[in-house]
Image 1 (cartoon, rainbow, N blue to C red):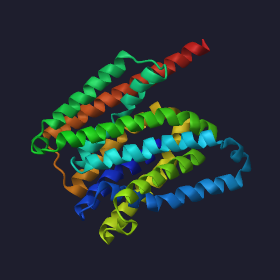
Image 2: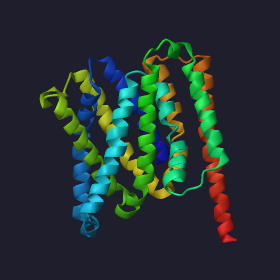
Image 3: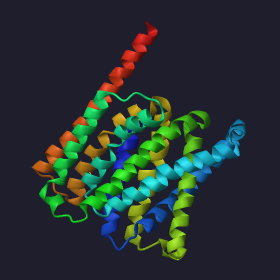
Image 4: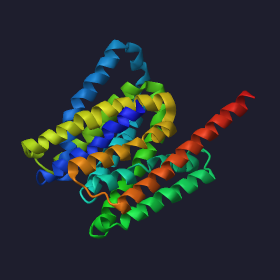
Length: 301
């Protein structure tokens, strides 16, 4: 489920770049159209769950709903806005590689705020991954991009937001179940997105043209609704670290699609940089799982 969810999420950057190429499209317009299409799916699923399982209603205290909504806004409004803003300035490959350093931030913030262990392997993984990003930054295509830094900072902010979301969401997913949590968290994010749009534009401006509408519909269904439920269920079953590890597949999927669909460059710098970034993330994931197995073995003994 984590691998399939990562594959579907990796299509987001491709569809977004196609949508940006199809016309003048502000970030808030793309996000609002995406969420206006996705919102009915989340609301209907959440209401059906409450109807079929009335016992779940006792869980939904006002405090829990507010907490769920705020976490959803962090993960799927703040992180999405920063990510889509960065995509206006970066290639799909670069965006995905920066974004998928978020498992490292999961561990870093886990150590800082949740009393989890920070190991030397995590620090080494950070160093390797960002060395790979430095190689990508030094490629000719990156050097010719005057907006590279601002785009990278937007996506880095998105990675940090999504890491915090994963750490904060785990407890609530365990309490509520992944589908109910996803329905309410994503509905809150959708409402926040639509409010943002309505403050800047008339609502009738949400549909720019049919070509953009087509690509954003694909983002809403195949890159938002379906993977949101799949990944949150995976998060419930195997935890954020393992989900992050299987998410390592996403940059590879994005790179392949970016080359063949978008025609993005993939020279020596891109190849080496991608390999180094993924090596750092895979090293972290491998050592993290090894440490967990050792801890479980020691506990049994």
